[in-house]
Length: 301
Image 1 (cartoon, rainbow, N blue to C red):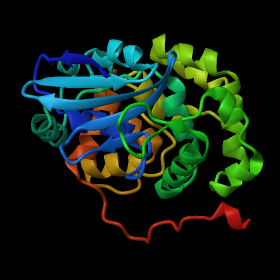
Image 2: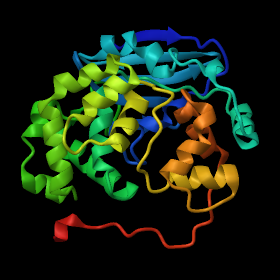
Image 3: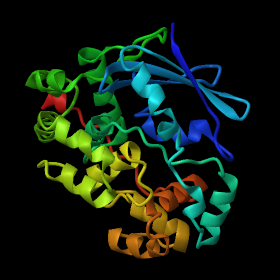
Image 4: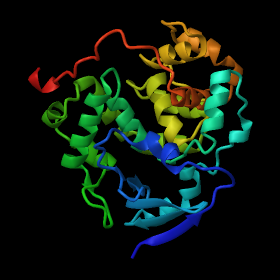
């Protein structure tokens, strides 16, 4: 029998939009949305594998959890759903941001409390297309992860640190992961305990802890801490698309770089990640002038 917990937010709440950042592509084996609108997540917690089902019930969220990690998942349920987030600390400074803020009052910045869970897929996303990274995550979980506890069909829990470390080189190659990214993941899982401690740190200390691992830079650290720590100021720098989108949305100009993006977001100091999320939700993006990057097949190399 599953364990249960009920959480009621203090204001407007959008479950699907708040948790959408945890899904790594439409075929993510650790994240599933069923026909009834329920969200299922399979996680590897400090107490072991666990699966949680989340569904809106009126103004509340009902949670059910299975597996050795069920108690941990339910204990941390409010943080996962954004209870520690303070949207009232945010003041829109641009008309577009104000409109997005008004249209999405239920957006919350979630906090999983699990660093490797977000770090490893973020490393897979370094310098490749989203489709390449999603494919790698999907294949690695299916081949080297474990079945998700509970009744969810076709869900997988990511490998534990030792299992990640034992993946042979040809399996990384088969998943389309080059040696640079696989080596970074191997270094990270060897320091798993130290990295997981970053979930309880403030942004500067947590970012420094992650970036102490060769191959993890500001981009990967920010993408991880946005999810594991729910940090409202963890703005992503070094991204190919984000500066251009934010620059175009706020000024109508093309070609914005990181420095110009940070200048535009300066009025949101302390809340730059939230501002970026709202700008992305506005849907105002520069028209595409070139075809998408083709997906590289490292297996052919």
